[in-house]
Length: 278
Image (cartoon, rainbow, N blue to C red; front, side, top):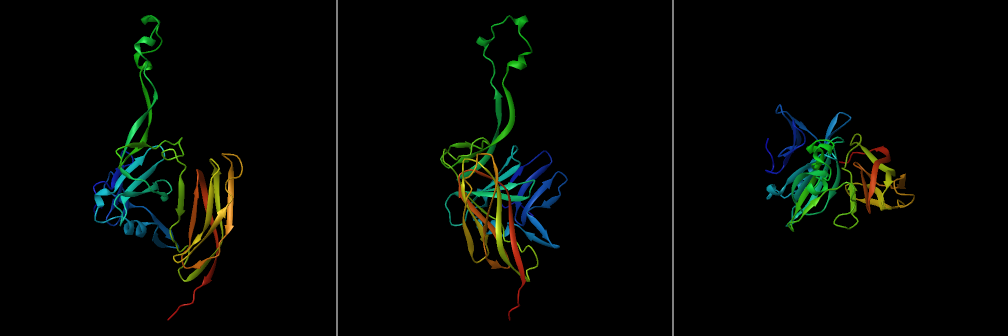
């Protein structure tokens, strides 16, 4: 077992590393034990959530272009990679460590990852110290600069450096467009056909976003616009729509513009025993 590229690893704490190997994604601990991630157990059957998609998309001729960075504040790992057929790094996968899921796949040219410590207080200047020395309260350290948590930054092909600030919902001043597609999972035995009935999305309004919501199979997509720009910013809402598609594997699909904090998805579906064909 080995890394698929020299940049396909990053530290997530003092005892663990996230790594992308030639046979899957793993957490490597200080004892040398590999624990595979991105695996779902469905009725006793192990299913990889995104392994096939990822390994089919990245440019295997340029594995050194895969770079990983860990965000301490959000407990997420960002993986930038060169996609097959592209000439630049165009995809950034965001992996949630605690939920063991890919929460987004973004499109921007991130060439490398780093971090810096956020300064929360500037140091006092000598000219500001107007009191007598013996009347100055505290110690010298109380008047120095103070620093807090670390923030993630990424390099760009234009040689600029971008900081990932949780208080900013725009990218380089523009409102983001976003797409979410869940992996195709059998949910139950592959012998049963699944027919989607209704899709739900629980979300919190931020800057009055718009979105579409639906169901997809390996062969088709059915989605439509749902109202997500109602109510005041910060309110919790539930959007839903009917989506009738049938297949052995179902997935959710959602897309939109503007900032939205998605809390959860729910899919209602029916099952029908599939007739074997000869």
